[in-house]
Image 1 (cartoon, helix red, strand yellow):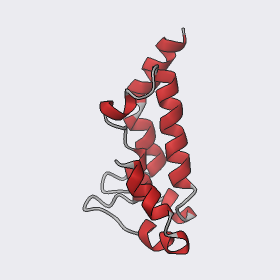
Image 2 (tube, one colour):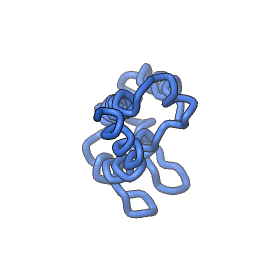
Image 3 (cartoon, one colour):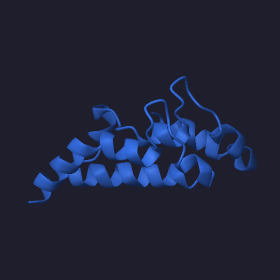
Length: 102
């Protein structure tokens, strides 16, 4: 995922809702894509799993604020909502964050 791409879409202003309606071949909307775990190369820019998780959640919430409410509950081909996908994708990071906080 590329934050610069989402920033460009955000810059569209009122037209961003048109872009937010798009889906990939797996029926993922923009929020599903934001729910995916960042690659290690991006995560490593922030030190510590708890802070990485915070950054991931902030990113998800920012994209969530861009999409219409109905897209928050939309399911992909694996029958997962964006929130469910976020939880699944970030399970290990949550565990690492808990260990990091101890």
